[in-house]
Length: 367
Ligand code: ADP
Image 1 (cartoon, rainbow, N blue to C red):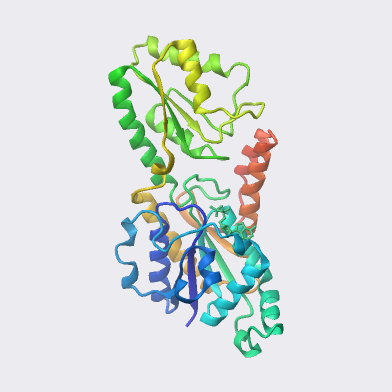
Image 2 (image 1 turned 60 degrees about the vertical axis):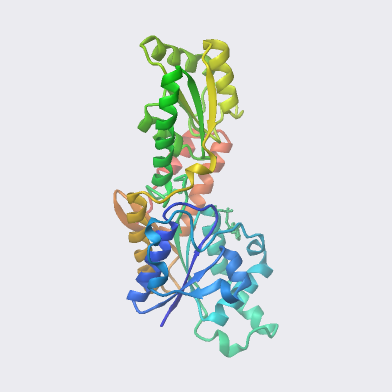
């Protein structure tokens, strides 16, 4: 009976509970034993009660719960070899040699590193007497499968990450609330949303709410002229009789000289140039909260079940897969390449090579 660990790691995202539920029940349905690892990688390092066998009933009702009920953490020791040694020991003690990790690119990078080091970690644990040679027999290979949990929708080679549509939905709902008061007082609102390297939330929220203007990291405006351009458009909308103004700013928005474009900068221009009564609303963690929307429940469930299949189909030779979705079909992508591509996109944006960033983001892998 294969034992499969499930971890949620990095930033929490609505739908992570749906993923844990699907892995737990998918594993049981396939004759495996699922283990929940609590508090991200910290649970692997601490072991004991932080690694708990899960039953079918343990995850009842989890589809509609927000956040992650098994906890998540930024775990510094897992970045160190000694931390991963402790993690490997605890896995062997519990007989676990397969991990399904639901997290962002950092978590998936850590998972793949763990897999590549695994034989060396076991050899060291045996040579230092921490484990007996018999204990590692049959556990020579670690299987890793990635699920992408991120509200930013910032992973390359998949159309949607678990949590992104829930967050988008919450942003739209919040802008609807703001709309009502903006309209009443004829005010302007600058709404700051999450997204450091990826403007998907700001872009889609702009479309879905009919915002007047948006700022995203991928399309930096001219540093000299953006203020006038934005004000001209807002002014034109006002002249047509619009009583409210909504400008959406991604937290990582920059101009073409790589200066940050902040909500404060935008507000100052709307006040100084157009004389608009302007307020800033930073949505912050509201965007992460609440229950998952239907799409994320569906995505996490289908992907969680496929992750269990991917564990059972993996061999020592197969590279670690990441479960994605492309054109509405659940698919498997190479984890290492997808993460590397995601990092290259962020680097290209940092280096001001926006065309390269866009081309990289559209890269497709053969299945
Ligand atoms: P996310 O998964 O949302 O991108 P982080 O980048 O904070 O979030 O990563 C979450 C956790 O994954 C880290 O706290 C750490 O435990 C682990 N991790 C991230 N990068 C690495 C790495 N290069 N090596 C080992 N572990 C890592």
